Image 1 (tube, one colour):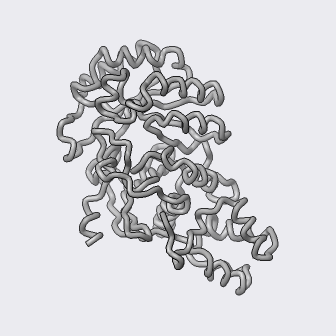
Image 2 (tube, helix red, strand yellow):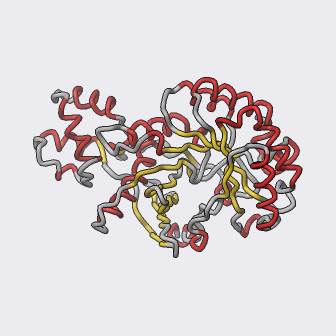
Image 3 (cartoon, one colour):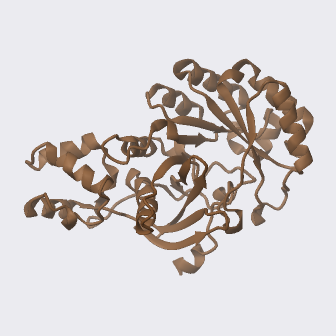
Length: 359
């Protein structure tokens, strides 16, 4: 995004080391950066003037250079299962969505990384709007912060404990901003969300999977596979034309060799498209040499009015598919659904309010 002269960056964009560099450039002591960090992420203030142990002059420098929160909360929807969907407005008036889910293990937030998406999966609502721009690291961090403020306002003492980078957009198509975001939310002096409590999903950008393997973060990786062979995958996922399954699996092998960390394969169940018993056996064969470090997530298809050529697989077909994988020793689970009644479930991330708000 090009910034106008008067548009300030969000201070959420800076990892602690970069914030420290900026503080030193202002002639301040190094410990001021840690104080700032604590105000932002532990005390979670929303104004520089609330930072009472900083000098007036330093607060003025902060205020001249940065804003804290770059997002404006427009709509909040709560589903019957406790899922909460947020519609946020960006400084350039684009809209994004973020979803909070209540899991058995804690509160998980699904963040968006781009305005729109260019991957073009034919079953997914998130790609209906073509990519307009990448989100900055600060705009991604702000999603977590605004959800945490929402929890703080409820005075329940709850905190965001898990993050999935699976909202609108392809995270690896906005690689550096996503990596900065992960560094910020993982920092032990700030939000301290454990790396193993964070999962990043990709549709299969092979070079970035390899790069991700080298970065040393203990963040989990999920791959949106959705088909066991090239014919089916190409028909539903345009990215397979550039990075077919053979290239994708080579990158997976590289990642597993480098990290020895488990990969989750996401597989959305589409009736009469990819849900036959023979598809399940092909998937088992594809993963058999790496089954100790792989996990398959079978995802019930969620209705998308713009993609009415697809239907949800029957419960019987899902169970047959699941049984084939289990008999072949593949770790798998049928994903529990969250927020379907407010269009917050997988593949439904879009807002019916966007046109109304943008008018």
